[in-house]
Image (cartoon, rainbow, N blue to C red; front, side):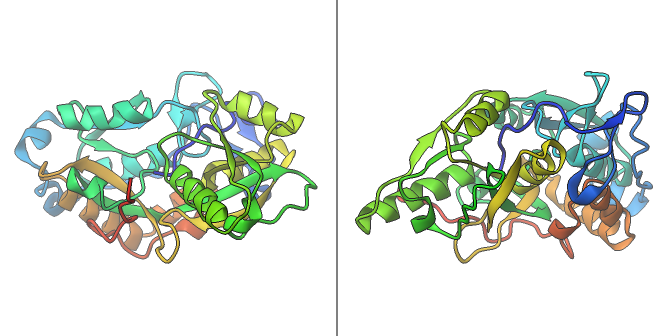
Length: 311
């Protein structure tokens, strides 16, 4: 998983009436107001027929999203009530194409999977990376490349390409995430090579993470590339020291719509995603959030994922 807490609210000059932020990724203007004017999909009867009867008859797709407010993945609009972000946009496209109404529930990371296990959720759209371990319990339909980024104070001059570059450094990371796994592996690699390990820190709130970064108590934050890029572009106080595949060394990770294994939904999700990729709606959604570089050419079902670790 490449999920992490980032800035709770966007920074930069904007229009209070529309909720738009002038200083977005790559200088783009991002609408953070409750009226999103989302790119919408069109119901495809053939694809709607792929949805299991119990879901089709209910007419609602119950979708879990992250509750940690991580722009541009999932966060609250300027009214502090409306959930917006690239995850909501893509999930809405899928629901539209399958003839269903998207119903979003924000949950903590661990409760997203509890929701799937208990049957309370039909899908999770929350920057979930495909892993071999997760494939034992869940099915995946991919919708974005998984990229991670290491964020540091602006002007630090620190560049990170691998394990030796973080030796002896203090880095914050989200607990239970793929970036944590990678950071732990780097630390172990450093110790085996006679270098100092990484001093790994965990914070419950994104505000605490960034306060620690600005005060110099940590050297960097290792998180999802979309959230890091958004924060770098809107706050203007940090920079990216390095980017990496969320799948680890030698594997390009992929983010996927997640459902309980055997739910019968993954085929419908993949088919809907392939349709919106082909008709251009998918590309428009990624572009409006500055994530065009993470686009996939097609959606895959249960592709090779991050390998299991010894632990």
